Image (spheres, rainbow, N blue to C red):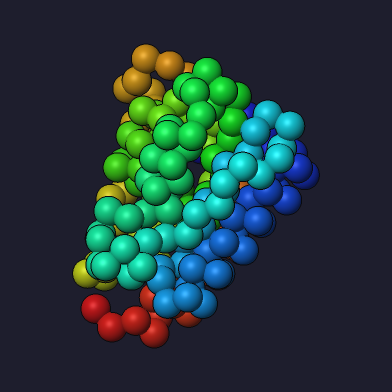
Length: 167
């Protein structure tokens, strides 16, 4: 679901989120990554998945961790002009965190539906197939959503990790 057209600039920043996902995977964590940029496209924060690094916390998704950090560091007015780029579509939990933090725009790679098909019923990733735009639409302010974007590149980040991971 794409509500707007993505730019080359969006693709470049999304690929930076993919780099964070690779770094997360190389550090032994799940291969998810997010970045936050301001309205000029300057990167403000980077965040990998925290499942392993946060002691097995199943709620330590990259988007949720980044949204919480951003909400502490910046005003909602400032965040309304920011974009969260993320390797995979924010789940319902992360979408709620993005909404409450006040972030105004989301660009994602792989859709939640495609991730669910790819990972199956893995105990470490019981994917909740609820599109982020549905969660955002239930709120009282608009959040622009672009994605899936560069979906095949995003899916490749997940492929080897989940194929070789025991359930």
